[in-house]
Image 1 (cartoon, rainbow, N blue to C red):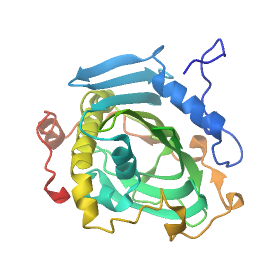
Image 2 (cartoon, rainbow, N blue to C red):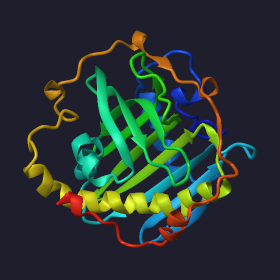
Image 3 (cartoon, rainbow, N blue to C red):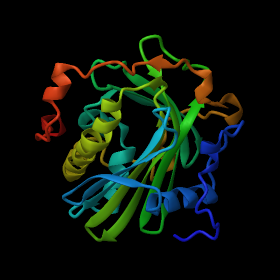
Image 4 (tube, rainbow, N blue to C red):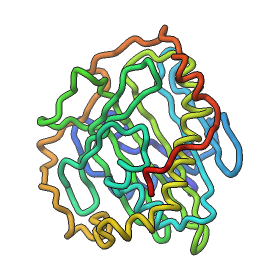
Length: 288
């Protein structure tokens, strides 16, 4: 998608530090798509077997950076990818980094608020996030994206570091009846000074591994879904949603500067993590 702006596509509004929570509109989705497809300013850090990873450093003295992953899915239709990314019960099966994840409330037919906590490379502290997530089918393509919000019933926990998703999401593009391309774009403030090995490992190993695991999960999803409420897809049929409603006025924007910074810049990688640095096959027996 081309932009008429001479400086290129602007970041979606939630990423610009808006003072009030709003559900993204068509303009925000179009901007997100344009950024997923943009090439200028991105540095390729990984390219192998139809999978590429790019990074974009925003500030040299902070760990804040953008990462973009793009993967060809030759045997996975776009609608299957879309279902897998939405299906929270299935995520608990295939996402080995997840500690806890659940939906909190719905805002509209295509927006909700949810919680996600994940394991970080040892010995870093684990993180969690509260996000407003929205989604939109665009012809044969789909977009799912989120940004951090504050919910009064889910304040930061003492055992986890509350991270901030400035803008994170997926662009799923159909390339045929049984093939697609997925682009993952993330700008996250981990709330802490991270050591360089974490940033390098994220772009060169952890991100590719996560994308490959997602691909394997997509291959197994149709069979799994047939055994687990096959017709329950509230992301396609909003009338199925059991979530309570929440008003926008109950939420507020989660600004990064209001959270505690954790200095982990001198933390060394654990021996277990170094040993896990190769590209071995993932244990996906839990998907069966």
